[in-house]
Length: 225
Image (cartoon, rainbow, N blue to C red; front, top):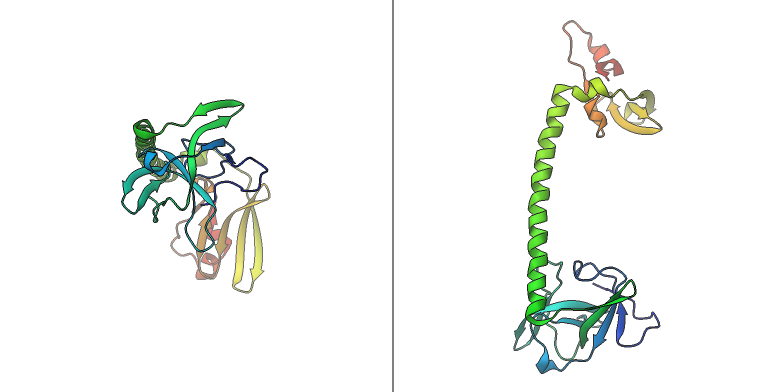
């Protein structure tokens, strides 16, 4: 919830933004210019600075007004999916953000209807990106499973993998190491094999052959690259 330090040696009408709830509108390190505002002049879409709730407060927070109720202001971060739990009252109001400074340039912070419109455009874009990312992940999982099944990568990529046999309190353990990195484990007693991606594209468990002795199946020869 804390979005800037209150001890930066800045004047009372400036703050350095350090939060994430207003990403898309502000960036980490932006210098926010705060002006005084009358309670009666506040409108939905204004970006306000206010003190957080609680006995000792939660520092100062910057969010946008989305509604005005008799008991106070409903505020929400442009990057948040839900409004704040508590209302902003005149008692904990600090001021309104009028401008921001970034890379030596000064920009006006949109408020009122223009501010609400920009907020909705940002959230709509975030929603579209979220839907596209979920579809991409679903397609990626299917494509990854197809690569594991057909063995194409195993024919093209042959990394150097070293088997290291260890004796632990839980029994024999086999580690597969590639370039000083452990990429797979085989617990002999449990018969469990775990492989990290993308090495699972080139490492697989051998099928049991008829007539193979049980003792042999408990050894590392039960696995191959």
